[in-house]
Length: 448
Ligand code: ADP
Image: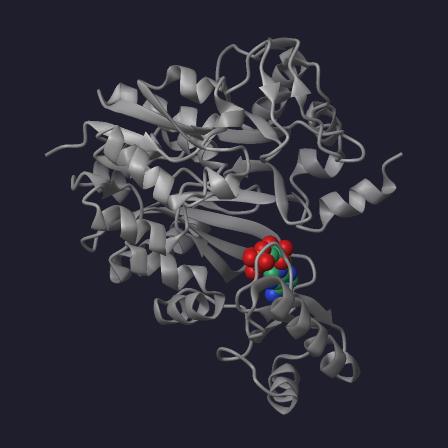
């Protein structure tokens, strides 16, 4: 039986994004929402809506029992988790499948492996992906740590196996500080994740973040859709993403993309995934794999013309990928600006009521957002309220158009990061594409 009704276990722009792909395929949608989101656009547009709990995400968007009940009540035959929330929760995926509802996502065992950093790195190495030099799995003792660090050379990075959001991570400049920093990392990891397992990696001084979009059909076929450069980050949060990366040649793209696709084929990976690398001096180093759709997926859609959510739904429905590697053509350049409801200088969140709203438009301009005039941005969730994605035949034209589009966006009533993006697009290093993952934070320190 083909999928006829998808429950979207998410909110905001990504819930809308999934709704749109589903409707274009003739599939009905079920929105779920907390009491704080009763008036949200994703609820208004969906064919059916079910309230799943109070505002706190733990009691609504992360409430597995309520979401499963909503699926049963609304007769949904599939669940799409979006990104964040339950999207990388292997247990949720298993529970969905145990209820004979189609899980629009990877196989639970792959979600689990990639969610554990040590297991993910081991698996990536076995699949032929290049790794950051470091310990072979967890490091138990200080003697072992010293040995590994001496082999790879200082500085090294001690990382928590259960890490996330940069917690439990320590840069160790020289051997004299290894013991104390390793014990600090372990304590931090224990407190944050209840697991003090750590491992060691070579610390890369000035890398870029380059990630490859891949797709597998779960039956041993996989393709890649090129890379995205997400080096412009603040506190490990991506701010602006672009495709293609300003530093890769078509030859390097196809070589590295091919390695990623081969790895996914070998694994029997199903659905969309992103393999993240640090890139320095022409070398790639695997850092993690995200077993879900990414926030920044539209830049890939813009330069390939492939609807990634449609592909996800097709694959979950047991169909083949709609395109082969040879069908994928990369053309032009796309940039996404994440627009947050926050102060563009202090980054303090700025929830509240939108008094006026007007989305930018025109050729090659896409705005993914659930905003409307009169909408109140609730304070309980992520501060990202819109994504502006702009395409141009060249990077230069893309930037010109992006500046024009940012100038057209009207979001009044709350503070937004639009002025930050406008300022960024005046910086020489951004214009020339000459930046690493350190650039944005360094620049913020010098900003008047
Ligand atoms: P987390 O899950 O905590 O976010 P990641 O492994 O994804 O951990 O790393 C988070 C960030 O830390 C990366 O995006 C990068 O900025 C930095 N980082 C991770 N590993 C290294 C490394 N070996 N050298 C330098 N920076 C690193």
